[in-house]
Length: 214
Image 1: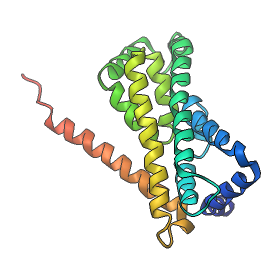
Image 2: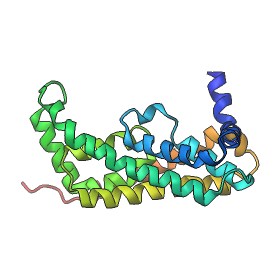
Image 3: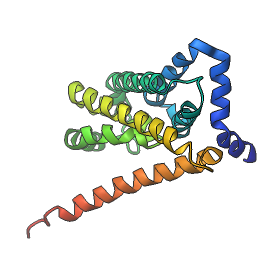
């Protein structure tokens, strides 16, 4: 556990070493990283927000990484990953519900379709900020047959805002004493703020919903 904490704490240094070793190929690695985060259901196995934040930290104080190039390559990868994962959901997702076991029932499939029909755009805008959710939301949107056009727009905007916000946060707060040495804590704090905002908005909308008659 101590080794994991130490690795995360020095994440910007490790990324800097990788950038120095790979040279001009490093942007391709950033693209692949963004793609795997949203394009594969196994994306949660790869550290998410901490890496993007650390890239921003490193870009703010080193010449190895151009912040705009880092942002554009990771955002493009994440946006294309969304579409690829959506395609997997369209191709294979509904077959899971043929099992009719546990959650995988026709009734829950109908509920999933209804959810994405009403809130799909909002879900794709917010999901990149949430670990695990960012890797599953595009797949579920595909199996729920969310229209491709609205999915692509909201998914792309969500990916761009996610990468942009974390790279910018890393670049700005990475200059604050103590943040560079505590990247893990900084990212956890940022993620908690995002989750709190989502929960607060959901509760506020629910409170405003009119009570059923009778």
